[in-house]
Length: 224
Length: 251
View 1 (cartoon, one colour):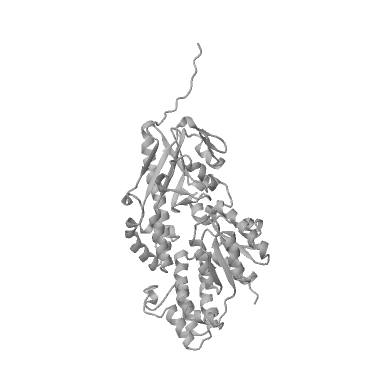
View 2 (cartoon, rainbow over the protein chains, first blue to last red; view 1 turned 60 degrees about the vertical axis):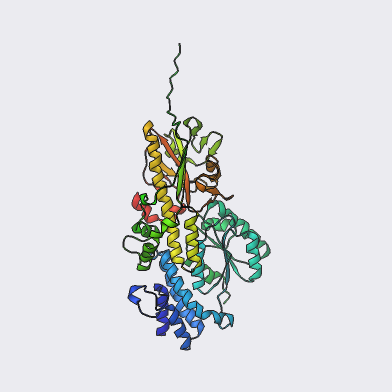
């Protein structure tokens, strides 16, 4: 494995954004995800390899460690920030089609619910797994989800809710989207949501943690 | 002549609705508490997180808008049933897990506390500026503040009923121990509109989001019990899913 990519993976895992960032202390003064991503591309490493062999690997490790309660939300957010610094160098390649996302997921917190952070956290980990995330925000109506699905053919839908009173709106959203796009896969999550509830409302997947959402997307929602 | 004997329950006539702005220095929120709330065991938080907490905690005073308050219902209007508590014309369907804990109460205190809109705005500003970690730390501090404000309020309620020989049960909130969140509407109907600046959305979400509400049993024969989850057998409760090890430790 290329040394630059190995270092880049490590920067994502440890949340080392750039040379200036003083954290983690044992990496102080070293290049961060920002510089290493640039360096990798300048060295002629294909952008797809930078994404797949370094960034996605780093975020996957972060997702697994979070699931295992070895690290916590702030650690994931720091990793995502490092990932974002590296992704900034890859963005032009997505535009030129030299680099492709694995797919698109339309994410949102359902109608009546204003909780945002959990959905954002999951979005970051999914993005770090090579997916394009269209974040519709909070208090999103079934109609707004459907409009986004219309605009992003082939997308997956991710629904979040944090209250028992609002998770019932997941069912209305699933029905509304699937009435027009029965093939669209929907994954649901949030504190009060269970696998049993997901199945009952006709959702295709449920995950209790961000990495589970990535695994669902990679295993059930990719064509390649 | 027939003499009718009945127990006379003292009516805390002077106590109806009270509200406060708890002073921040009286709330026990320090770096260690925030680290714990973020999920870290003692001494395991990484340096950036510790640095963020140290930077943000001193700035809380300029963002927090703490308010809390309570209302003790007249004992004559409160009937504690097996599944619900009737408060005059309003019924709180809190379920048997909670009513069992309240059964010896003479009345209930309805309480609310909030960190206000300022903390939410601050967290959102940080996140919008690209610092998700700091924004999350502020969000967590806000949750801790509301919890601490509720503990502070408990002491106020305890002090207000002490003169008539009453004490308090634990706090119980809609959304926990099988009490549906939707019952917030009934709970809030027992408080003045916009009490402590808190309103409800149609989906029973409190605004500001960083707010707590619930009931506390009050009376001469009540006491605080063990940790809340020990009274409840719900297997698929998300509180239990969130912190199973911690809860086990407390049993």
